[in-house]
Length: 543
Picture 1 (cartoon, rainbow, N blue to C red):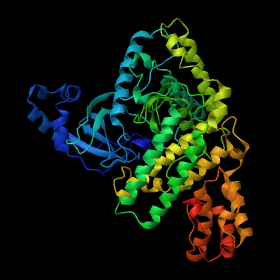
Picture 2 (cartoon, helix red, strand yellow):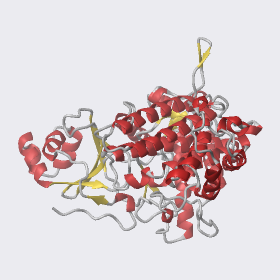
Picture 3 (tube, rainbow, N blue to C red):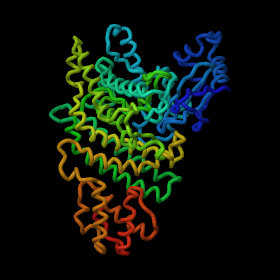
Picture 4 (cartoon, rainbow, N blue to C red):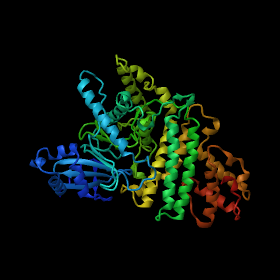
């Protein structure tokens, strides 16, 4: 059958052969029973009047299924029936945590936003501020795993451009690149300013406000997320260890990485009750490659991947978008693209501060719009304050550190699925190898951009501390690691501190380096390894 080719430069919409199989006969049978899909597929054919069994045979004969090559979380497929294109999103066959891959939440928010957009189109004809949220139209959802092996839903296929590389090099002009980023930030502000109290989303995802109930303060969005991230990480490690595909070296590395993730989470938790914590609809994974841009115009026509959406702190979405400024370019071989080594002069790409400023400006516009006589402005004023640039900038590093931790856990899950053989992306194995680098980068950001009011000890550079640690080891010679005060530093985790000493011994005996230690430290490690005793030091204090 003929397969539709993607638009030029639409890297994120390229398809491959099916990597996770689908029972097309069962899928066809289910699709003809869904009213919205049946109306779409059979509206212009005489077959619309025929029975379901005949419609199923007709659909199966014409259904072409391909799998998208981009994305590591949920297997996603392009369904083509003659000139009609649809997208199917399904859960992986194996999941680490019951609440992960929440397609039911993704479908629910798409339905709510579809109704919200329709209401706006009917009422905001004379408003200068376009408050709609561009999304694909959701058609049908299936919670039963008996159809194709897991939960799934079907939505509209939106034609356009997905820029896997945020440099957007295929956009012809600098002006269009400027406008593309502006529109991406505008849409993000729109998401954070939807009137959730009118859409039945008060309890969507568990909420995120800091409230009191019976005198007890409820956890903030960040606090809830930190707890859940550690649970997911621990479960992923269990699945990884249980997999027949894993080996001892992989298990040891993942154990060290998991401990580092726990240490970072504890440090972030110290400030979670002081962060701004606004309350609104949160996309959960807002970034350039989750947006579809118009085929020719610098305008966002669809926001994808809502599985992490919830009610919570919008600063997390801003930080998620700004992570690209700390990631290297795609040429560096990380498997994902960033702007960390780019010269922005004349490129049309805004700096991180410009992103924050632009967002705050859009937030102010929404605040002004709500004050123009809305009957629900009192509800909004209690939770949807306009973002102020000073506060947003001051806390931006904290939210970045949190988002990098969150993405470390996501990549940890990609690694688990790659080792288990159920990864949904052809790039999954490459992405999984990023985990040690991302853990190191998270520490670095937390140090360089600490939250307001941090103590002096938390501002000491992670890389500097690790360098001092190795220098101290060199000077200690035959002393054990527990005899030196550098190992008590609260920022440098006990496990990582011990890891440095253990790595020195590993280098000495097997000429191997642990992935959590930067390459720039290898010469020092080599020297230290020659000075360490051959006997095993006492490590019981770090168990």
